[in-house]
Length: 454
Image (cartoon, rainbow, N blue to C red):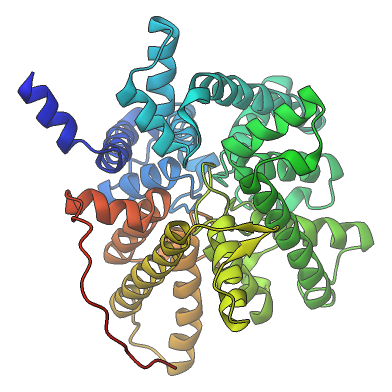
């Protein structure tokens, strides 16, 4: 009994989350290294590890073409990694325990609460059912719509397979596509664009938000009675989508979108705005975008999706709290308020910590990436590579998957750094730090002193 208790003290929720993703990545790597996983060409360990990490961390960065290089077996392995990695291993394991035992232990409840980024434990059983079944229902609907559309261009069996793969990849915000140029060939197709965008948005809102929205529809509650968390997520998500849509439409009107008609320009602008924060699909060639659009993509990738979702980034609520804190401090307000509700100091501190930790990790690993990939070529080429590598780093830590096209050309050292960024981006820099530290320091208070700032 003492041994069991000590084990549970060691295996904190943070450490369990870190280890579960690590073991899943390792298992996926071993499967992708099997000869049956590729179409006869084989693959190196670093490329298999990169692909398994990208799939498990629902990123979408690829070193080989997913549709042609991997065999059907390899593609299914990638799809399973996306599904399990998107929802989380603890979700699946706890769901099986809940089905068999019809209840969750205190330890299981704590793990799920941590995995879902908070919430009351009294509803975790209902939430678990809603997440697993709701996910499969939404993915099935998306797969059905996409399959019907793909059936106009492919045989029925192939169309169904494409529909399932892209629906799961979209809802899990993974960005993996079986087409060599992502969704570029369908950039004028309303059905495919809208279906994938809806799946991306639903997957990026977070499971608590979807659960809350379900209760609004079922019980016909007033939208103002929703949780503050849901209201913040919804307002920030759609504000960013609208802002990104307008910027892309204006900046790329006569640039990357010049050959498109009005409908195509509207769809492309909206799609890029939706996918930029975490999904990784694209209907425009990222390398052809202007510097202004690339900078906006960097900001969106850093913000990411929402807590408890399938996406990465610092999260929309973190972004909202940091902005609200800056606003309050500039007005000399002691309390940080959002929608006439005060935000606890502990939550503000956590938001600042997450943002700062992400900046530090991103800064350090990006610098290393620039060092190991510094070419012995012209200064102009180095400046171009600088933009490409910085974009790659933001895409990795935001688990987005957008790329200017240099991923397959990177060295093994650069790929290793991107693997670390994807891993940290999916787990969270703060979670990883706490897990590796292994101990929680006592809450000691010392005498205060003043420091001049600004």
